Image (cartoon, rainbow, N blue to C red; front, side):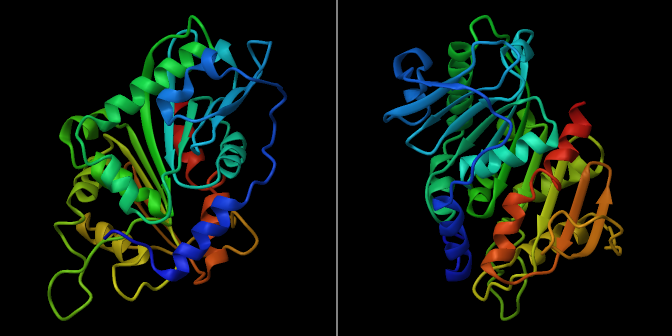
Length: 307
């Protein structure tokens, strides 16, 4: 499944061009293109923000759409650090949601364009994740000299960004390295080659394996989905239902506070470290809400696991 439908592409475009102000960052903007070495993360000119105090946020943004943020400052990475790699969505929106969650891990945001194809293509190579993490580690050590090495790893995605994760989890060594997966209204699949809407078991195989490990308590796999109907491929509701059924779990009525005013909870399902939260909404705006709500829906689950 290479491309989003027109409705989801419109929502993705809205978010990618939007640049709301990020919250909670006090910094001096300086040109550190050579010092930060961020060309390894995507190339091009960059603007960077570096705090003079070890406990203040440190961040750098490249024009290629990547952001590296150390929310709690360099003191938080002296003895090693956890990392969250998020695929797809305006870096400022992701960073703002991240700040609300209380996570202290290093954040990397990657944008490769519209549609899942560019993400799938980039991470089809079994060694692509290792190269990306090595590049991230070099940047962290440039921003925070003396920092320790990477510990736990979580992968996060909104919308088309799931394409990177489905490929990464398809490689056993990479899947073993990942402690948590967070999917925000962005898990799609092809249909079986039959005359009914049946999710392709082959296309979902890597997600199914990770869901099994999460349900057993070994990993964290948390999903949110809207109620958008996709005519030509499985919707996020259908793929989530597929995983729920595979684990033999029943959906239940929600009893949570809505993360955003326009988001209405429809169902919940969970076992061990596997959880699914369903929401109403069939518009591009409803799809975009899942990105902005990351700090209230998925990131807090990771924060609780890593605390």
